[in-house]
Image (cartoon, rainbow, N blue to C red; front, side):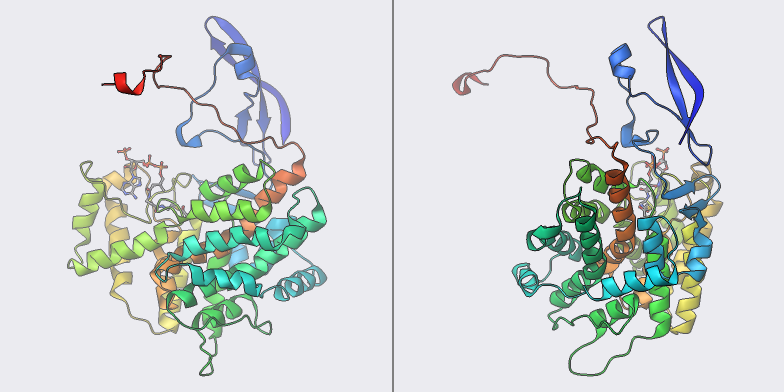
Length: 432
Ligand code: ACO
């Protein structure tokens, strides 16, 4: 962050006030209004934080107009092509691509922590069978803070490191156990001879009664999807993780909050909604124009799920990579689905439509990811869980950056109160 010596002048009620301009390494500029209320009595109003930065961050850069996404300076296209998810996780969390020795140690540490404590596993039997796996994920992650009381102090780097490894190691196990429990199958314990994604797929789809082998193409595409979802700067769930962490809450509690925020259909839950929407269109005869029309109708609440993004107003670079991967994986696995054709026709129709053009609404990361997950046999209610597995290193890196900065303050926005002004208490019997 550079102090530019530039200022922005605000004129309020005939008086001028200067606010310092700060500039990021990619020349983004902000003026710091930290003293605004003290000096003028005013606060700012910014619904949905669309124009507000609450922190500086050196993790992820994105330019929504140019369709650029970089983790720690590395373009997402290069990472998607050349990297492994654990390498990207290391990059996000610790700031640099790991050396061979660093990656080996990181991977070994994660691999040896994949098991869940048996007492923790008992929790799964307490949830209803049809519980949404995101609810289970959030609950079990939160419960980790009851089992690992030795690593809860956010100010102790050794404890934080222990929690990071435990979370990275155990989240795939927690997720796969949620799925196996939901379908009444025995939970498959982690296999530490398998790499990260193959181990997850094995826990999802193996059964004790027969041999099972994860196809390398499947592990490869999962690796790609996790990388593409690994971070996206101050999105809703990451901001939630930062907000919870800003009260000095432990990492497990903060990540559990991130999982809850991700679950919403306007955020990570959109991938599930996209598949359900494509299925509905298919069941309704495949008329995509009808649904494009419905999405434009202001009397309807229907939106094209997987379209639009708060920040990308050109294209979502992750969507371009996923679309290519989608074609490839369906061909390799010889999966034929009418939903891919519907998705492509829907995209074509929307991209030609003035409503979507004027509002700069393009397919986002979730538009094609669900089709890939389906091709991998991942059930629809696990899609958002897959997103959470990918986003975990992003959440951790932001939480850690905030705690390491030493300058973070507790998150506490202001409000403009619009309720009743002072009134006297009316006794119960006297109320009408
Ligand atoms: N379908 C139809 N119209 C849309 C869509 C959509 N998917 N998205 C936005 N619009 C319209 C809005 O109705 C609004 O129109 P108006 O100006 O006539 O009122 C305009 O485009 C701007 O929309 P906002 O909701 O103000 O945009 P915002 O930046 O707040 O929302 C969001 C972004 C939530 C992603 C939105 O585009 C959306 O709901 N998309 C569908 C859900 C989705 O795919 N979410 C995943 C996002 S990516 C992620 O979280 C990983």
